[in-house]
Length: 312
Image 1 (cartoon, rainbow, N blue to C red):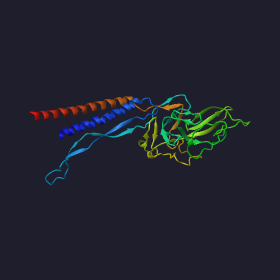
Image 2 (image 1 turned 30 degrees about the vertical axis):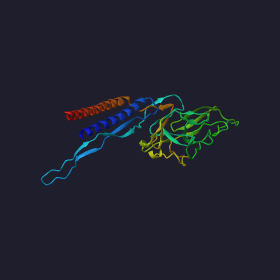
Image 3 (image 1 turned 180 degrees about the horizontal axis):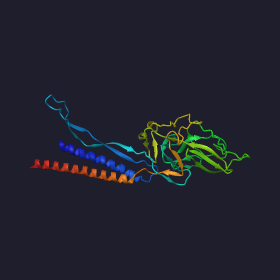
């Protein structure tokens, strides 16, 4: 029975350290992936076999000590490190990095599903929407009618950020003769406000990119491409999804407020994988795997000796 327990411990260790190496390998493979968040395994002791339970002693004897033998290890969890990666300059005005806490929200226009992401490699699509590489629309506050003077009037609910177009929605502001102004460039400031600059030297805010943060980001589910679901389970601090009170002078979800980081235009967040740490962890996991494999072979040798005793 003891030898079977030894084999069980060795096998459980082999399985656990294999998963550990898988996680480390995935981290190393994504060392250059935009806004990738590294993971680490948490290993815990498996079932304990109790040979003797502790018990109170008598007036002449001390307490009876417990006698227990462990039966191996198990994988408790795989924990994601959501710390910020370094921001790298790209020079593209639609590349947005977050300096500090927060996630962008992007929406699938087909099924209305919303995802959180730190990957800010955005672009303007053919319909004028600010989208990510998968075509999901960046969410924030929209402006129905941009004005080149005075503060903009934002929408009261979350919407897809869109640039202006002549005769479209939102419409491009008009010059003194009633003709649509020509858009020369667009930029996104640290607060997430999308600003259009026109041919006559004026400018107008056409929207505001909002950020969401979470009390328990470990509840987010990674679906690949840097997109996270299960937003409601993670405890959103800004409550942007489904809200109808975001307009006016409210700073809900505004970058740089309420504990949120600022938006840095022309940058992208890099992976937060520390290669030095990953290689050190890989060596530890590899040696642990080798030791577990040795435990299995030693147990096999002892079992073989028992079989040989039977034959003799």
